[in-house]
Every structure is written in structure tokens, then in C-alpha cells.
Image (tube, rainbow, N blue to C red; front, side, top):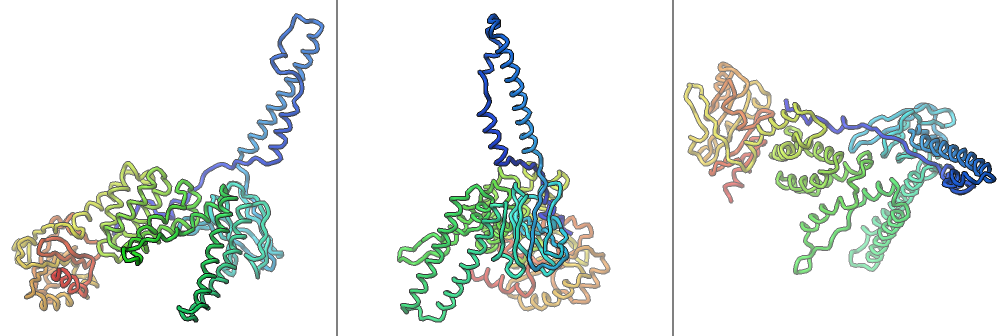
Length: 530
């Protein structure tokens, strides 16, 4: 079995921190207290001791001033300890029409959810989330028994109230004491209205002739809707730029598509996609770890890697490097990006040909002793060892040689084969998929042998009798070898699941792997046609 990434994303949900809060009332008292301090400067308190007539006056003033100073210091200390103490969250919610039962506070980390808390809903639809320690800042869902939910943003201030109706959860939502959530629901209502109007116009557009005046009018209305939404968001970002809501909403926006035209004036789509991919992260503050506790970052990463990047190992590695290198000094993002991409292309987890190339790149460049601060040296060593075992058989590399004995005890080597194309077939005689694929490969071999193909079969995890029985049962006609120690293939041809097929071309480079027998003809014809 594969050794997985040592710290998967669902294991890195952790929170520590302090609640710093200083109310407007405290600040007002502080300012007022400073400004009303009476009496002469403190320097006067100890001078002119030879003026006996005035000495008692100054002594009294000194005593009064010192008392006031002590009171001031005590007051300021009380503000300090009050403001630096962690304030317990208290989120009061009432949903009119919500039946009694339970409500769950569901937290988000990237593309995963976790239960942060629960509360009992009374007969009036009222419930409170409270605990000793603050909740981790991020986006949360309040999930009800019927699977409906409301959203809320939590940052430093976690004492506020929300009130709504079951039949109009977002539309009727009223928030007191949380600017982030006031803005969130104002935005939800705006986007709901925007989407309805946009969809209506779009449906009308589909019914019209593309060259008609009505079509042009609808297109203009759609463009104005989009421009109005952009202006609405920009106004919010300008006015409330220091809120968590603004950071969250801004991070979720797509960049504008750049106009990139060919000499004839037509759009160069590939270059537009390239710039769009590069610009995708421009609105994301990669220093803001709160955003990792929202769906925004995971959604962007998934789109960036799997949709906007060509699914070829070289392209994926290039896109990954561009993004990850931006986070070398931003540890939480670095950890998440590296683990997510490595897990996405871990062998057996991806249908991409040669996903191992991406996996190896992540391990060898980023999950290292110097950079993988979240793991221990033993696990890093295991991952590095596994990446080394994979690295020798990546597509495009020179095919390693293997020498082992055939059923007659004769030593047979891959490099001794004269046929232009070689298929390395790695199998186990008791493996169900191997039993299914072997007869197909026998038929394919008979068809392609005279076209310049040879097969080099390597039996794995078996004994001599079992291996030879298998060869006889399926009348396997190609070169077959077995090394009981597996030393002959170690760190040469990586196999995670049997059967495994590698295709080697006349230059003795690996041109395909992780494929089935049904795909061999396409691979060979494509290479022969070059």
C-alpha cells in the first residue's frame, strides 16, 4: 500500500489565539479620564521644599496627584486585562417557525467540514452557541434538522445576535452586533436578486435572433447588470476594506478576462486562459489565514489546477510551482497547497497518465526536511524514499534495464530485446485484474508481434510453481521473468497496483504507463506516426 501524505488536510484543523477586545465605552472613559486630571505637573510635587508657607499646599497636591495617578494606573490595568482576556463567544439565534430540536455549527477548512458545536433549539426557535474558547475565524454554517442552513462569518467579535424566519432564511435575516454578518446577508440578498434578473434576461436572450436589435438590447442589459454588481462590490470593498467580509468576498471574485488578440484581430484563447490562470490569485491575500477556513481557497485551487491547467504532468508541475513559490513565506498556505496537490496526484488516486511525475515533484521539492515543518523526519524519509522509487520510471525518461530469469532459468534482459517497441507487463498470477487483462494482451501480442512489438513480462509477489502454472494456463507467448527477491526491479519500474503496463519506444524511452491493453494500439500508432 502507498504511504500517504503525512498530514492530510482533515488533520490540520487546529486553532489557538487570544481574543482582544476594547469597547467604545472603555475608550471614551479612558480619554475623558486623561483630560480631566487636575493639578500641576508631577515635577512640581517635590520642588521648593524651602518655601515653608507653600510646602503643605504642594504636599497636599502631591498626595492628591499620586492618588489620582495610582487610580489611573489601576484603571488602565483593568482595561488591559479586560481587553486581552479571551472573551467567550455568544451567538444568539432565533428562527421563527423552526421546530424544537438541535442545531449544529459546522466549520469549514478548505474543502472539508467539521462540527464545531451544537445547540438545543427551544419551542420558540431560539438557541445559543457559546463556549469558553473562541471559535476559529472563518465561514460557518448553522445546520438544521431538515438540512437547511444559514451562513455566518466569525472573526474576533463573536458576540452577536441573528433573527430570521424559517420560510425566508436569507431574505428576512436581521443581524445585531456583527458588521461582517450584516454585510454578508446584504450581499446574499443582492446576489440573489442579481441572479434572478440575470437568469431571466439570459432565458430571453436564447429565444432571440443573434442579429436582432432585441438581442443587442438584452446583451446591453446583461452587461449593465454585471457592471452594477462590480460597482456594488467595489463600493463595499472601499468602505469596509478592513472587515473579514471584504477579504472573503474579494478573494472569491474572478479576474477580468484580458483582451489578447492575434494579428488578424481574433482572440487568442490559449493566451487568455494563461493570463486568467495567472491572475486568479490577485485578489487573494495569502497572508490572511482566515480564508483557509472558507471554501474560497479550495475552490480556487481546484479550478486553478484541474480546470485552467492542461492535464499533463509538465503543465501541472509548472502551475503548482508558480503558486506554491508564492507561499514559501506563508506557512499555512504552503502546507495546504503542497498537501492538496500531492494528494490529488498520488498514485492510484488519479486517472492522469504519469500522475507520479506530479507527486514526485511535490515530494522532492517541497515535502523535505527543511520545508515540511508539519511532519517528522521519519515520515519525510518514507515519502522521499517512495518518491525516489517512482522517479526512475517517469514518462519521458530512459527506460531502466531489468535482468531476471525466465522459466528455464535463462537470464533475460530488456536491453537485449531487438524489437522497436517493448511493453513491460507487471502482474501477479492471482490478481483478478491481471487474470482479466492477460488474455487480452495475448491476443494483442499475436496481432502486433510482426509489427515490431515485444512484451517483457515480470511476475510479482508469487512463487515458482504458481507463476509457471499461470503461464501455462493462459499460454503466455512472450518473454517472462520472475525474481523472488524483487531486487532486479527495485527503483526501476514502479508498480502500485497490478497489472501495470509501461510502453518503451525505439529510443528506449518510456512513452506511456498506467494504461490498459485496450489503449496500447492508440499509444503505439501515435508514436509510430510521428
